[in-house]
Length: 274
Image 1 (cartoon, rainbow, N blue to C red):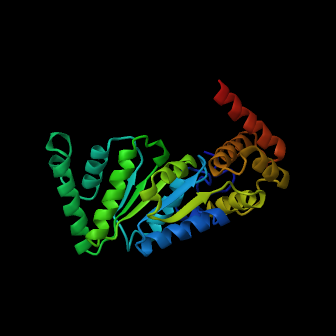
Image 2: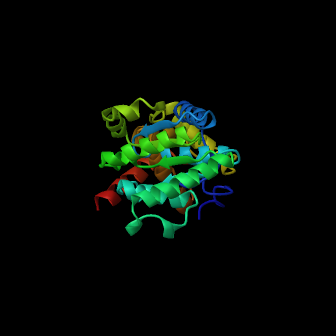
Image 3: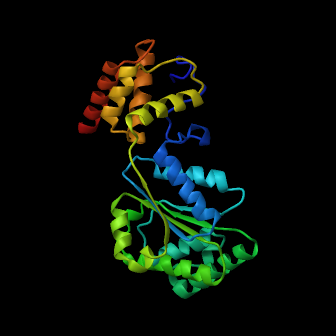
């Protein structure tokens, strides 16, 4: 709606964007490099942890985009709260098994055979499947983690380069520590932190430029207020900046100041409270 007013080619703070909008802050770049190392060198299991809104899912999307031509298939599980048997059946189907041949009354043994066949076939085709379990901190059945560990053991025995990436909030790290055999298999452990004040400014500038911006929109005091009110969390930054651009368009502003950012945050807080 506001893109033409600000002379933008597209929305700079949309949640779903391509790799051109990826800002290489120290914490995000380090996590991406570690995960690339994990997948490219077939190291097995990795953890990507961080508070909500720090960019975990976005990092895995960039990873899949960068490595999709040489690795995969990438299986992204976004709802992990299921039983171990349901999880294995889901994975089998995502890796190419016929849904009518797994799960339900067919039994776990049938699911395992189908899953094994798919993994072996992928290995023979020189494919490197990657399993990304999002929101893994919500898994309350430790048997699910044990099943994933056993699946990795099977893949290793059959020389299938399967990679498992567990993504979740920081409490996921505590869960993994309680499962000693799983923790021992971790090859990389990535923890995303919020952006610094300089990184927040760089993040906003980069995304605006990626959207086609060629002039200053956010004043220096606006960027400082943005950092303080967002605590450097990318998702919060996106929400605040998106609404600020909309308000600026509606009020026909030339630039956005700290007072505008503060007013937008107050509006968002009021909306949540209501």
